[in-house]
Length: 172
Image 1 (cartoon, rainbow, N blue to C red):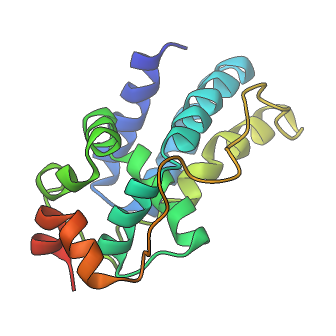
Image 2: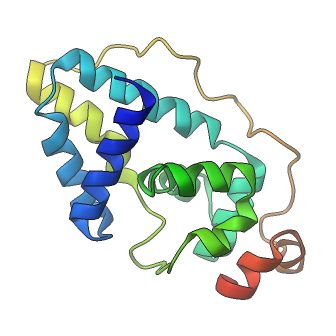
């Protein structure tokens, strides 16, 4: 599976789910079940590589603005959700997290920002297809610390300064 097919699967299942993250995860599992186990593992590698790539302080700060605070678990689920928003939003956010102010049409912290189930979709599909847990994907693990320079994620003034567009649109 190449990167284009990966993003096509993400996009088609998100569009069919009409923005509902739980429905998106269910549809993603259904779609992955139409593939062979090796292709599901390829999908998982693409997903995991992007999940690890998004482990950045600047994205964590953007998540803190959008979610009105983001601990470790919330940031993990935010990264899954961000991948689920598709290539344009994901790549735009990785390049410039403040650009999420323009990249997101809307954001409802009650339903958006939590893509926990998306993160497990490939594992669930692989297990249903094979009856076994997915093997190690053979990609480097997430770094111990996020990329970039750490900063206080609870400093509202600092977040407003660092993410002016995002803060204006979605901040407290």
